[in-house]
Length: 215
Image (cartoon, rainbow, N blue to C red; front, side):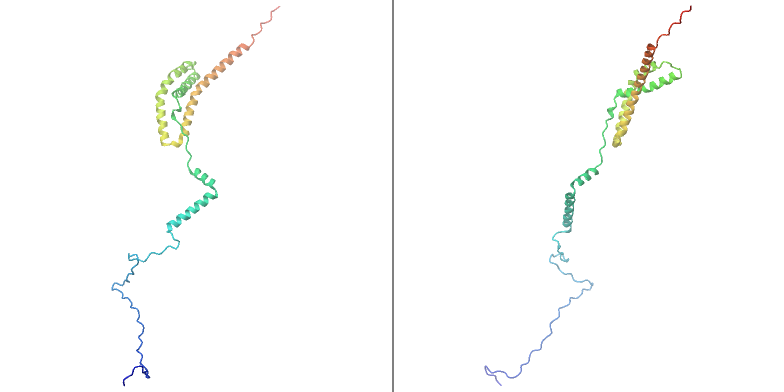
């Protein structure tokens, strides 16, 4: 029956059947068994970089902590840090010049063996008068000092080159040589003192009184 315009259909109209929602397609695994790579925004094929919640890299964060700790230690006791830095530095050894021993000082030291020899010969009555041997020592000691001084200077400088911290040892050796050179002068001073004491005693001793005349 033909429907006229504006006429209402009193019968029930069939509704089209509703289709269930389509499930998302599951990607198939490739034959090798590896999962497909997810492309990142960076384009390198890896996972996107994780953002640092601190807003800076780990190296910058550690550097900031170290700077804060250093500033706190300096502000607590600045004098203590200065003392620690100065105490950590090794002490500088005192310098010593091997030329402190002069040729004249070494010549005086060379006179000592002649004094010892003269004393020994006088003790055994071989040379009762030690003065001739002492004169030989005073005359020939400079000749012995000139070549021996070169040897001493070379050995002292080489020793200080290998052991610069042992300058005190070289200074002690020079002091001993100078002291040995003074010994002959001390011996001569003692002899002169005894000679003067003997002369003074002879002058003070009164002459013996003459014997009384017999009656």
